[in-house]
Image (cartoon, helix red, strand yellow):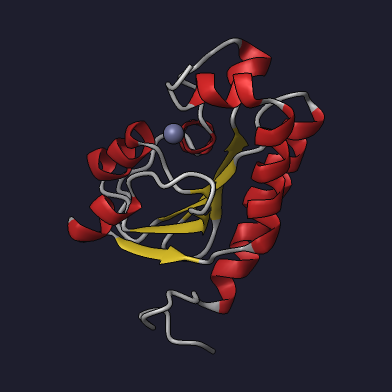
Length: 159
Ligand SMILES: [Zn+2]
């Protein structure tokens, strides 16, 4: 097992397994005609609390990001200490704020090559951040951005 605090942020084996849940959500979103970003919230004991995907297009709701969807699917939790938010893409400021607001302890990021969100900021504020630099996540986003630049620019507030 690799050390999760390794400088490269290679992540634990379980982080890769958890990322697969987020990737499956992203694929579902893509199949629905949406933006392929998925997320999952795991409890301190490794239980899957909730998962979801970006639903901006599907629901015409710009506030329904993957992390938000996973967070809402998890319902009320007594504490977020020890929980991990796994997301296919570096979290935007809105979702980074959610992580800090509720005290989510860890964030596992699939990739930050197509979009560099607030994960450095989270790391500076004591959140354990693991950047997996996952090739599949990057390829999925690159293909989507190429095919739908207008939807993507709308999503990142750069329309
Ligand atoms: Zn977001």
